Length: 370
Image (tube, rainbow, N blue to C red; front, top):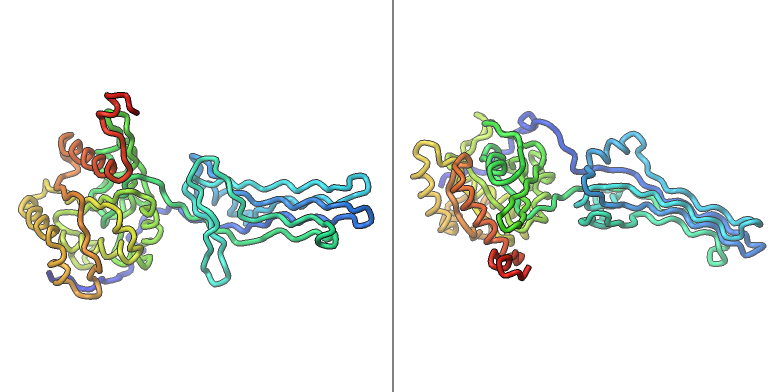
């Protein structure tokens, strides 16, 4: 295989549209109020900064709510007074965020410390604590509340993640197999934001599938917003790799990649971004078999996939994956095929997920065990 090293061309002009799956805001918890030493009075505690996951909310909406304010602050506590020895605590500030958000405290060096992940509707977490009120323990001096720069990163929660280079047919496949209605066209970067569809089965089982914008060579170092896209598959249970049987070429200025080359490069990108991703079960769909001569190419690629270790030996070291990936299934189809092909893919997906997370069998429903 004559696979050259990855060519990292300028790709910004190929990226169309914008989606927000990361947002930043400065947060400041309330200060504790002073106590009253003469009477042993205790000042009120400052309010906390609380994140609450809300189904249906988006980071786009969060960004619009806070982009002008820039600061989310909780109320300070009330001081101790002669008429009210125990000062009232300050009210917390509750910030609504989407389900699936990871909250980080950013530092001056640009790094971040993970504070919490909110994966359930109405789940709450305190990210900045209010200062203690003045009391004998602190010489009756109210303490400052915590202040930090908060970064919120959204990671989709889906059972299946679609990965592939642009224009591989992922959106068409998602539309055919689920209730999603993504934009479909014959040019790269039709999908500019992650799209989630639900696959429904006769036994009432539901499986969520996420379509990500197409990856580019160098996605692991954030080329083409690669990090923004790849993090959405971290929580999936199954990866569905989709490739064009005829290969992929981003533009006339970029090298043409054959189908097997795109498979090798996709494995490499996943491995370099996060090696644990390859511990998930992975299925391969070689798409667009309605193209002339595609049947012969499919059989050749299928044979190569069965001997990936030998294929890797022919790949230049700088783009060679370190681990040989074993696909659960290799399926050839056109996303424009009829119901039979879609039904077969749905069946395979369900079987793999059943092995991984113990989805109920159809027989369980018939016997009334679930």
